[in-house]
Image (cartoon, rainbow, N blue to C red):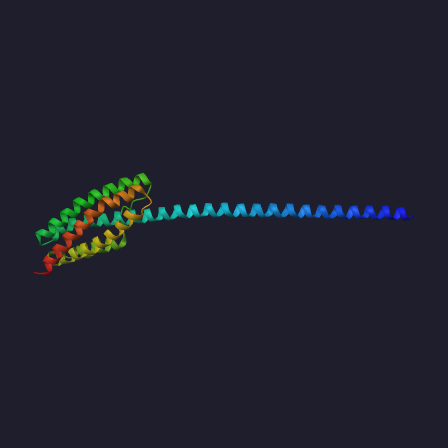
Length: 203
């Protein structure tokens, strides 16, 4: 009878040990699988999202630059034409012709680059540029001369700042080179405009 009791006790103990071992194995396996899968998934998703955002930002910057430069360039040509027709000073008329020549060339080059980069180019002036054209269209003679040259100084300072930024930070090699190439011309335009402005102020 004692032997039977001992045997039954041993059997019960073996079942208990086996059950504990099985429970630990299942828990360890589940934890490892969940942790590994969750961590890997999070890393991959974060990387993909970051890459997408970077590309989207670069594209937005390129589009903004092309839009501003194209609209500004078209305005310079239009205002230059008005200067040739309406200015009273021969120096202002000559400056207007220079704007027509230089900005027409720059506009054509920008359109070519934008086509390669699949960046839309505006066909019409931005509202702020159209407002400047409308304002000058109502003036003539010395009034036109003063307002036009004031506008040229202000606009070329703004253009130079934008082109300097693209020349340093543009993600597109083509646009970066275009900005670097155009900057000396814009700086020369600003110097010419400031010189004419100073002469007009001394009269």
